Amino acid sequence: MSANDLPPAGAQDLTHAGAGAPASGDPIPAGAAGRPAGAAGRLRTAPYAPAAARDSAFLKACRREPVPHTPVWFMRQAGRSLPEYLKVREGIPMLESCMRPELVTEITLQPVRRHKVDAAIYFSDIVVPLKAIGIDLDIKPGVGPVVAEPVRRREDLARLRDLTPEDVAYVTEAIGMLTGELGATPLIGFAGAPFTLASYLVEGGPSRNHEHTKALMYGDPELWAELLDRLAAITAAFLRVQIEAGASAVQLFDSWVGALSPADYRRSVLPASARVFDAVAEYGVPRIHFGVGTGELLGLMGEAGADVVGADWRVPVDEAARRVGPGKAIQGNLDPAVLFAPRQAVESATDRVLAAASGLEGHIFNLGHGVLPATDPDALTRLVEHVHTRTAR
Ligand code: 1CP
Image (cartoon, rainbow, N blue to C red; front, side):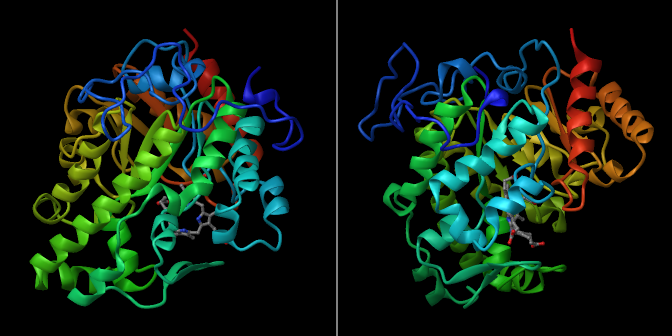
């Protein structure tokens, strides 16, 4: 049974493998910390994810293996444009909805059922782990994450304690439910990268120019490095929880890092992002790295250690692959605003992305950034179908 045919979450008896249990026939040797030993730097099967997902087009493309068709998923596919999402979220604040496993499961499955995408992305937000360690923040409708007391001084770092699996028990529970329901459809876990998380913490909310963030980065490089270090530890712990619960791949969103020059990225951001990727390398699950406006940073983002690099729509995917260098798959990159054009124009723009990707070893079709809230859901369904048909081999 595939997730595409599934009834709404909770409408059936959920008998799923216990969260965190290796689901494949071959046992994973556990290290002292209960994590799989060895295998660093080599992509194999997601150790705790359902074995059925192993041969999915999405994971094959991440591993740069031949695929039956180009896999498709959309950043921000869960929520936003779907009427069934708006219905189940009615009256429930965003952060609270992230802490209810049944609701998270339902919202995560909705785009898989509707659009027949090749992967699910776990419904949450990049600020959830910060909330979980006690940072006073909220997600305000129409605004985004707002932090009550910005982090700008050395003494503020004490508020950034380590994250433990117990802090996010609802994530483990939801992923256990989800992997039971998704079957062969892989689940992508995610987290915000240290720079993007820092920008919300230091600014206190969304920001166009990141002026407080840059003032700290340039003005007190030592404190900045400690801040990013703390965030790298929290992010790594959060990704580990998701992988151990059954996520088949993880994406690190560094959405706002395109605000930096390559030299500043290398000096002030790359070391912390690299620590996050290193910390989950031992699991062997594909690690995806994405940011917006990162044309000049793609090579460095690859260097940080991802297996797959996502590109926005400003750089054609073949050029993105050249900048990233060999040995990594590429994800992207239809301009999400193109979906507002007539069907024929969407198909032509999609075909241009596919033509640019035709020589790549490992391409995952996605938008160049998240689904825009006013997008017609039917345009997304048609897009999945179009990519699958055009690339069937
Ligand atoms: O992709 C999915 O379908 C899963 C859901 C998801 C993801 C991956 C949400 C739900 N948030 C995110 C990640 C996220 N959150 C990112 C990285 C991805 C990206 O660049 O789009 C970022 C930057 C955020 C921060 C955030 N959360 C914003 C952006 C604000 C800004 O700075 O411009 C906003 C508006 C939110 C709130 C949010 N997150 C998710 C939803 C459905 C919402 C809307 C909140 C609501 O309904 O009240």
